[in-house]
Image (cartoon, one colour):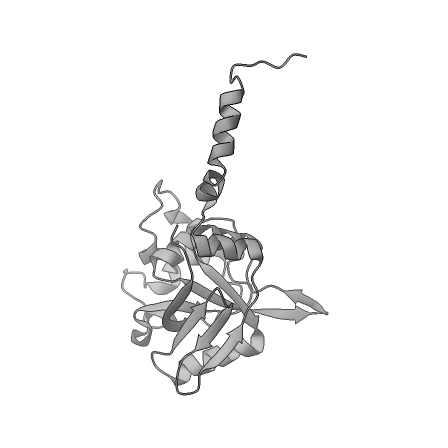
Length: 214
């Protein structure tokens, strides 16, 4: 997968909570045996009208979001099924970073992303950034106010900066393992191949036809 270090791009906003994976990539597109071609079908049911033309009421179809690569959303993004296709669709639609707010309910911190979606994102090179609700609200405000609002997301320093005359910097947390995988571009296969020498040695020292005695 493509490594992630620092990315600068236009920020788009999707003002919806609890966006599930079926809304990101509907089930009818899961029949393909390929891992490509999903980008145009991201958010399909919202993105297009019944005749297949772009729906002007869908916020991400707005001309000012052309070329966007950072997406700010509301809480609980990527809930629902475990389909990895949702991450493939977002990446192939041009997104490198998804930003969502964590929130506090009854004294407990509720993540901005569903766990499986976040793990799938990490394994495919899509960075998920969790900020506070107040910080994400500020991003929405600035994107509404400034057409073509851009931001830089710096993974090594764990910072997201809204660019402009008065830049605003947000800091975010990420676990060490996910950060390492993203920085080095390690998908599951690449992570396994880091131990290729040990695997080769094991295979050379063990008889694959060996039977287990009971």
